[in-house]
Amino acid sequence: MVNYSISEENYIKAIYHLQGAEGMVTTNALSAELKTRPASVTDMLKKLKTKKLLNYERYKGFRLSADGKRVALGIIRRHRLWEFFLSEKLKFSWDEVHEVAEELEHVTSKKLIDKLDEYLGFPRVDPHGDPIPDQQGRIISPEQLPITDIPLNQPMEVSHVANQSAEMLDILKHHHIAIGTKLEVKKKFNFDNSLEIRAGKHTPFTLSESVARFIWVRKTSKS
Amino acid sequence: MVNYSISEENYIKAIYHLQGAEGMVTTNALSAELKTRPASVTDMLKKLKTKKLLNYERYKGFRLSADGKRVALGIIRRHRLWEFFLSEKLKFSWDEVHEVAEELEHVTSKKLIDKLDEYLGFPRVDPHGDPIPDQQGRIISPEQLPITDIPLNQPMEVSHVANQSAEMLDILKHHHIAIGTKLEVKKKFNFDNSLEIRAGKHTPFTLSESVARFIWVRKTSKS
DNA sequence: AAAATAATTTAGTTTTGTCTAAATTATTTT
DNA sequence: AAAATAATTTAGACAAAACTAAATTATTTT
Ligand SMILES: [Mn+2]
Ligand SMILES: [Mn+2]
Ligand SMILES: [Mn+2]
Ligand SMILES: [Mn+2]
Image (cartoon, rainbow over all chains, first blue to last red; front, side, top):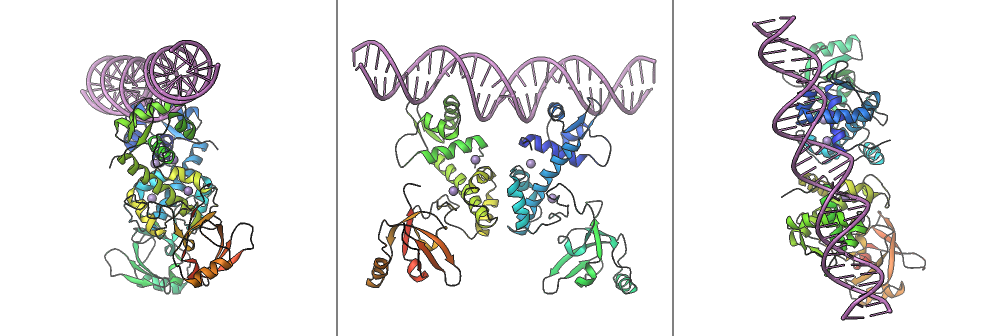
């Protein structure tokens, strides 16, 4: 396990976020993302290429290598665990966590991060609803999660219902829930783990835990 | 509030630790502390002098200015709060906390640190028994603490007894405790907050909270 | 298929923080 | 009080990461 500089890490993470399933990342796109000049980006690309983190040929664009992706997922794991910590334990609001996590993510002690993960109860999503990679860099739930496991006030859409009984459908119909319905969890009641849900402009309604755990959602594509 | 680089912060903190109540710090001493060459130290001294953090005249040694001390106490506050967090919340052992805190201390968000302080319950000493500066950089308990407030297994010596009744003296005599006695707290019993104490090679004994809170100690000069 | 435009890279600087080797100043020994 | 030794500083170099300006390559327009 080699260590990378803060700059290298910021580049690697930014490339990971820019590259989708396929297609090349461009120098200008990365330059814009990192707010550095294209010429500086080119310099770093060469460096990351010699470190075998990048597949890069000049003028042709680039993508992370398998190694590069592994490194990126480690950084993202640290970032999102710290975001969860800041939000859950230190009561930071949503919009404040990212900036601080941007710095904390560069403290690379593996023991620190794994212990933090354990301390936080192995959370699966950060306060923005993004998945937290595990110790092996695997994203356990790349998209879908039961509605019982998502953060509050996060716009989501129903992606799957894990119980196809008539009784379940009856409830869903009653609340106008279907695959693709956009909703947010507004409140969790710890007494019985029931949830208050708001779907669009409808009046909010309550779901019991035994119903809610079958309703799977993912982040809406827009956010 | 200006920000300082990681290198600058490490220098400032090291100087703070090297300078006692009076007397000059030497280039070689700082060089040894930081494991950098004396020539590099001289370069940084000039820089810190122009930033008015240091009183420095060449060939004559140096000390932190009032500003420099203020900055140093901020860094030390961050370092020790993180050490406390690692020890208390993440269950790191004693000897592991310093290295990680050495990196975490450079994340300078004031809100992060003040919220962390609150989350930890405003601890007064770090896991090594060293005092944690408050938000204003004041070290509330520079030396002495009631034996009820110190970490386990930390060699301390009795510095003050805050109750001079005959009954108290009776107990102290019985356990051979006097000003200067060296002891360690081996265990805290949460049931009644009583403490198990070991003084030198004597058999360990137990003190009730109502006795213990009058016994003040400080770190032994050696450690 | 040129010409024009956009994207990217190269070349040459700058700043920060480190280093080695040599010069200078301070301290200790004789 | 010299001479020897130790501590410190200066001078010059280097690597990392950024920049600007100029050159090169790719893409789009005419
Ligand atoms: Mn970052
Ligand atoms: Mn996030
Ligand atoms: Mn440090
Ligand atoms: Mn400590």
